[in-house]
Image (cartoon, rainbow, N blue to C red; front, side):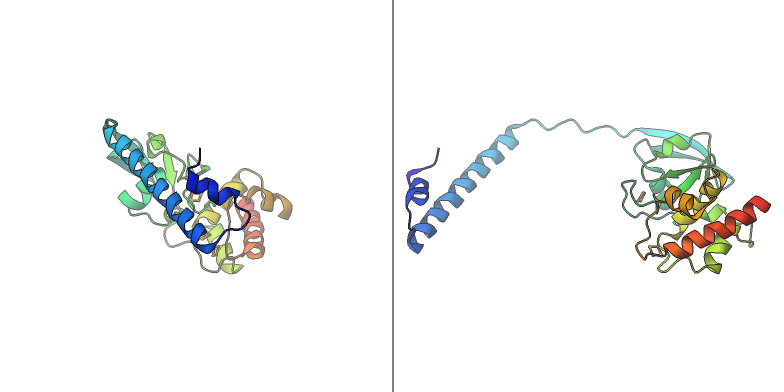
Length: 210
Ligand code: FES
Ligand code: FES
């Protein structure tokens, strides 16, 4: 129900500037009063109990190295890798499973590590871009990305390479069209897609040969 001042604002065919300003002030005051009332209500609410920290011991293997450490059950695999293990190759792009920049392998399958709980790595093998090369020898996919200039800023590149290796292993890198389809979860904001597809085709033939 609007107040008389508001009704006069709504009814009158012609509003004087003075009337309009007065009406705005009334509406603003009403809103502030309503907000204050809500603030009082909020203060009267009992705060929710703070959830206890759920610490668990994680035993997993990362890039061939066995690790054991205490983690919060809510920690994402991406945060574990970047914040606790200093493996910053996997990138945090969207943190919502939409860009692929955080792609790593879990037991040989590609996963978005931002959407994967670190606790899911229990007893499993995690491989990141840092663990892909064989010592100083680059993985064929890494070399192909260099050979085909398949990057510009490089931010998406670790995720692209990890996804590409999995794409080949899945048998989905047989044609340009399939590569585009099965790599569609990895976004490149620089638009280096022509080079990326060429690199994957090239590396796929070498990996199959190997
Ligand atoms: Fe994980 Fe974008 S950061 S999908
Ligand atoms: Fe810049 Fe892909 S190279 S986002």
